[in-house]
Image (tube, rainbow, N blue to C red; front, side):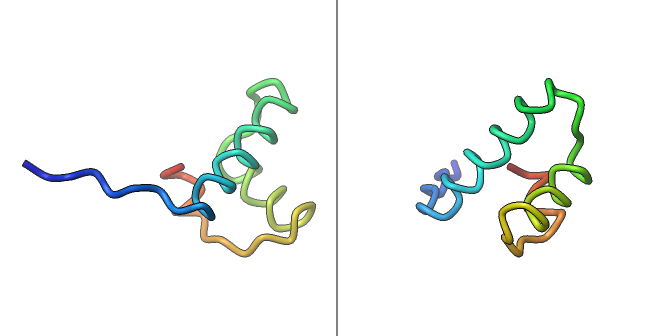
Length: 54
């Protein structure tokens, strides 16, 4: 049985940003547009893979 890793504060904050962007655009943004929005508007440098998993 595998234990689930606890989320770091950074991961929790990232999920909040992703959720905010997603709901701001009424669920029409996929991971590519969410990633672009994070990079441009919030100046966060994360990979697309991280955005997909969150």
